[in-house]
Length: 79
Image 1 (cartoon, one colour):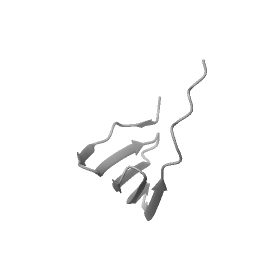
Image 2 (cartoon, rainbow, N blue to C red; image 1 turned 180 degrees about the vertical axis):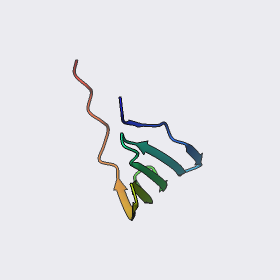
Image 3 (cartoon, rainbow, N blue to C red; image 1 turned 60 degrees about the vertical axis):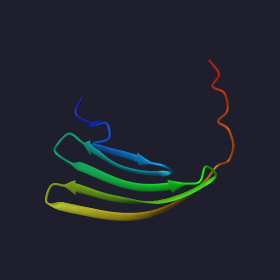
Image 4 (tube, one colour; image 1 turned 90 degrees about the vertical axis):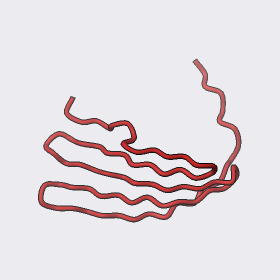
């Protein structure tokens, strides 16, 4: 108990684009909200993450650019 990540509070997919918002609340009231926008062509993708962290009286904001590329199929999981 005391901390948790909620399911996306907002998730919208349209074609090759995805928009989402996640909220994580920690014990003591610290809260992080992440909003993301991504686009992919199936091989490469790019997007942005906007992160806002509230720690008591302090609010930190980060904006991150993300570039991705497909490396191949995920390896099979061994049991």
